Length: 273
Image (cartoon, rainbow, N blue to C red):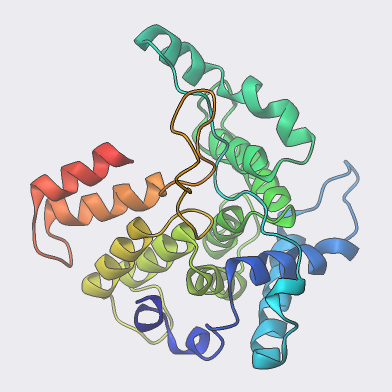
């Protein structure tokens, strides 16, 4: 289904462009980037390296090395917090999310780094609102192999939020992430279609709604949790559907934007987010 929704430049290499391959290529491309004076990788440098790596993947096409020879795909998406048992513990847990993931993020956990980026962007969970800090964390998570963070970084540079504006690199990154099956990539590509931000293409609410639906239907990391993975508090599954994708899909359904209006189905998507 994804192949029918994505733009033509990505379709030519979509069979080879998987989450695992994209993640590995970006991590490898960023290995030689010089750190800034504070010891960080600058978001602009990571985005430029990622866009270069994507171009290399497209030019290589079917000549790329077998995916089975690549390192396993690392955990994708956001950090998994333990479920709160009561409203009080839920409120406390939500307010302390920054402190709960900071050590893991500084230790190189890509899901924790991506989560800190999201917390800094919104200024919630005990984090100060700081778009630049947010972009730095998304860049770190992308280098760590988190494709959802890479798609988010693509959005940062495409719009110049927390990073220098580079629409071409941002769109390259978003399109590649979407082609690989990233829910965040699919959502961000859908927003581009909805807003008419793709070069030479008019706004297309129907195409956007189809991308939102596709994003809501896939699992973060590409595969659903196995039957052996429990939903218990002690062992939350490492894979789930994207809350962002479910929200966007639900919004399109509730308000009938680009798709048939279905308030009940849209509300169900929101509850699942």
